[in-house]
Image 1 (cartoon, helix red, strand yellow):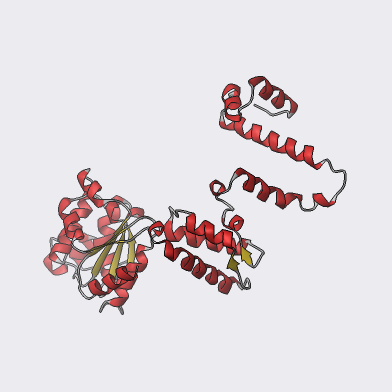
Image 2 (tube, rainbow, N blue to C red):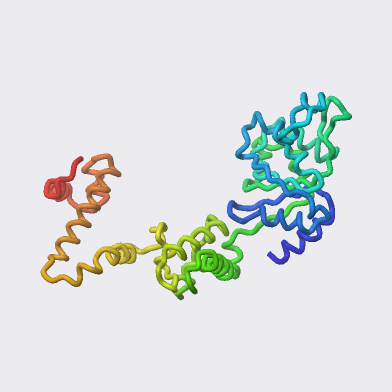
Length: 317
């Protein structure tokens, strides 16, 4: 990451169009903002346009403006993105989602430094740095005919690849600690820290959602936990897959049985066992669409045993 930011400082000095590629959640927009801040445009606007969230038939108008209005010289209350970013930087998020007509016009823009318009005197000035981001492999998009070859080659001239979090594991604990400290400060929760088993989990998990996922998980755990220590179970609230079945059941049972263990003669064992069995069979029956043969195979029990359990627990099929 230090290498990436050094590279960002170097390319920020020039007005080249830049491509930032990487998996979702790698916070490519933060590097784009750093490039803007390092450049001579730092005092200008930093505008973001999400191509993926823009209807394809509105992409050209949103980015380049309305040609008819431009011909008439009528000012707009809602300027296009290039006008809004004049003197600064325009970040085009998910550039692979551009339709072919917009790709063509965008390519002409970055090549000629102004968009093509029928009336030359109303053409937008190109005093804007363009940065594109993508989570897709543009080479594959190009081979499938979804992305222009000339645009791909132009963007490849200056691009930065953001590494996924699983390839920079030394950053995991510092990032988790940073997000934890943010929550502590914002919500005044009192000092909090990670237990050893929590740190082990953080380091071993592959983080498919990258930095965005670790930020979300740590912040949620810090808010939900009543303890000054964040344990593995706090981080795994919505991630059953990271629990063993034993850990999952222990966590759930602890929440509901703390008070019941203080009572005598409450038939705790048969009550809990029957409720767990009933819930398990009920869920499997729903998942298999009421198919008893398939449900019995999934549960690993005899079909006749399943039938008797369904009758015993009065499970509706």
